Figure 1 (cartoon, rainbow, N blue to C red):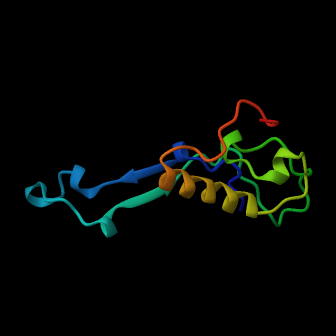
Figure 2: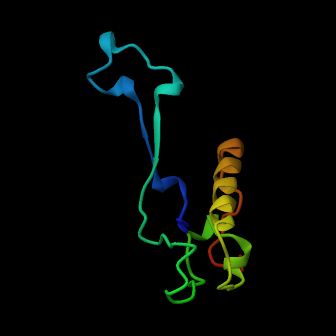
Length: 105
């Protein structure tokens, strides 16, 4: 499966210390936090050859892979890896790595 719209807004983090199940409101270690990817509205089965060709306009602009920006309809799950890399760079830098107002920008 390709998600095709990975962006920070599509991740949910559950912190067990926020729930009432944690005794004495102790902070839970990071390993107990849960990260979930949501919004599979643009998801596509990579192996489904019976469906129509992939669309070239997927993904949020700041996290869109170069092949999508250039209009390719032949891509794979690497577009999701590119988006995750953009998010990791944003976490490190404290700002989006590729902010732009349009595809050319």
